[in-house]
Length: 53
Image (tube, rainbow, N blue to C red; front, side, top):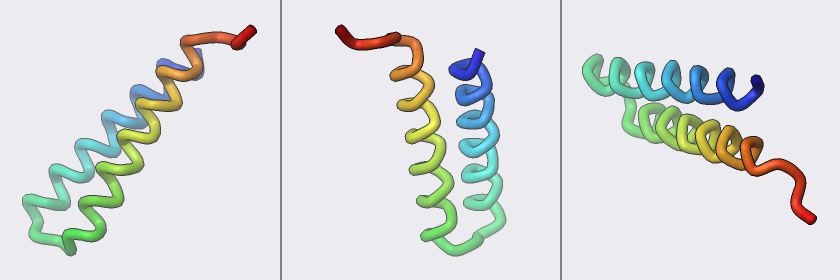
């Protein structure tokens, strides 16, 4: 369940980054949104692995 929500969040963040880039906003903001989207996808992947034994 949480992984699906995190993937949705990653999609929203990536869409925001693309939108900000087209609006010519500062590059640091665009990069920050891409980094947050990648971190959200990584967290979703790690949640699918389950507990490590």
